[in-house]
Structures are given as structure tokens and as C-alpha cells.
Image (cartoon, rainbow, N blue to C red; front, side):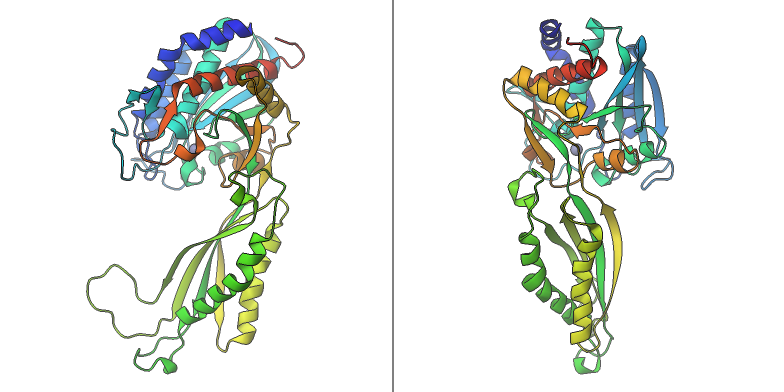
Length: 425
Ligand SMILES: [Zn+2]
């Protein structure tokens, strides 16, 4: 069976290239969320021809949803002949902007040197194509199987996934008993299994002052100087403390095995982007957005308390220091158990196809697994796909054709093992 499966997948080399090209040619740039509907319809039409029941689910009233840019998701399900578990392959169809520096047309799907080039080739239309080809090859050889297979193409992953997996999870699409195992073919390299991700807390800190004439700043209170004091304390206390924390999570790259904080932006005083001269004013407001990534060993409450303790102590030390803080986003860390069925099935596939042990990794940033864990309460979920992580979002993005075929073989084996857990193929 496995030999026949490999042969079948290798015979689909041209098909996997053509499918990847077709997917790249939909310029599904997010924001604004362009071409979602035709891309979802293309996937749905293909899978319908293979006997899938296809639903289109629009993320109604989610951020960015409009008549011009509908947040259109596609979910395709094919029931086997007998009851059994359901395995789901979830890919996001949105891509990020192209940016500068391309030497090929980012939406032409150029093939060169064994690679397909284009925005989204790696992240993650190549992974979507690999999962579709894996499932189609398996269905041709084994049309009668227990359980069900699902493939979805979802939107807005690059902007938080609220109109995509987040919305569908809220409607029960990523919960038992409908679904048991989920593989997200994100580009983490074909020999790696990604078990989850670190947590995120975004917040906006504002320091307050009072406006006065800039020639007599002593009559006002400069909010930017107060923010300077915040940054000074961050430098002296917070950054060393975060760097000293280490996680047992196998995060890649290794630098992300500590807690991190990025100062995303600072704005104080008069707005930027005008041509004339400024007027002489003491700024009465300064705002800083922080992007704090935390570890599975940390509690969100403690993460927040480290920052507010610094702000409170500044309040005690500095005359007139006042601040406010506003949460923008919270995502808890998630890590699937290494012994979970989907992990073991994909690991066995990697060992068989690539003749090596898999590497187990954790992503420094989040992806749609957060919604599946938190909203769907489904924890048998990983990311596994063919693209090379470092290539994502870059100019001249590509996916290797051999990598897609290898990962399709791994996905097909994992599907077979998960659908027939008690029989050796
Ligand atoms: Zn992605």
C-alpha cells in the first residue's frame, strides 16, 4: 500500500505544480483580503469533483468583512464508508503584501530550478496543494475508509484569523465530535513537527502630561519625558529579567526560548506626516505599543504585573507621573503533547519517508492553532508542511517541488494511520 501511495504521489508531480500555480494566481493579499471568494470557490469546486461535500462559510461581521472583501472560507468534508475519526487539513489562503525586491512576478506561479515561485508559495499555498494531493492520492487507492477527511481553506490568518479559523471554531467546525485530528500545513520545514506557539500580550501604555508653551516647558508636564522614564526602567529592569527566563518549549529560533518584548511603536506630541513647521507645545500624551511574547511556564497575570509594577513604582517616584494601559490582544501559549496521536502519526511518516527522526519545534509567533485549542478545545493539532520557514513573507518566495511531494507522502501516511488506528497499513 505505501509503495503504491508513494508512486501515486510521485506521478502527480505535474499536478501538484499546476495546483500550486493556480492557487498563487489568486492574489489573496491581506489586508485588504482580496480574491478570497474566487480562491475559496476554486478549492471547493476541485474537491466537489472528488466527492467532497463543500460548504462556503463567510466570517460575517468579522474585522475587514464587507461586500467588496467578503471573508469567505471553504470547508470540504468526505465521509468514509464506516464510522471513524475525522482528520482535518487546515490551510490559510491569505498572503501578505508583496513588498519590494522581487525578480519574478509574484502572482504568475513561475517554475524554475525545481521550485514554484510566488507570494504565498511557501506560506502556505504549497502546503495546501500538498495536503490536497496527499488526500486525493489516498482516495484513489482507498476510496473506502472509516471516518471522514476534511480540507479547509480559511482566511485572515495573517491578521489574527478572526474571520477564518476563529470564526469557524466558534461555530463548532474545530471541535469533537466533528473533528478529531488537525494538521495545519504551515511552512515549518518538512522534517519538523510544530507542536504549538508562545503566548502574546499586546498592550498600549499611555503617559499623560499637560500642554503648555514650548518656550516655558516648566509650566507644563511632558508626557514624552515620562515615557522616557518608562523606557529607562524597561532597559534596566524588564529586558534583563525577560532575557533570564528560559522555557522548556523547543522554540525555533533558539533566541525565542526566552521571554521577549518588542516596542512596536511610540508616538508622542504632535502628529507626524505634515509638511509645515511644528507649533511650540509641551506634549500632553505619549503612547507606546508593546508586543510581549511569553512562555508556557508564565502566567498572563504575572506577565502583565511585571509591567504594571514598573509603572506603579514610577508613579510613586516621579511627581505628576500618570499613566493608563489598555490590552489590545491576548493569546495563551499552546503546546500539543508529543505523545498525541497526530504527532505520533506524522512522526512515523517523517521517519518512513525521510529516513530520519523529526525535530519537534514551537513557533515564536502564533498561528491558527490558537483558535483550535482555545475555542475548539481540540488539542490534537500540529503544524506540518513543506515550505522553508525563513522564506515566508520574503521577496522571491518559493516552495520546493520535491519538498511538497515528500510532505504529501508524510501527510498521506499520517491520514492512513489516523483513520485506521488499529490496523497497520
Ligand atoms: Zn502562514
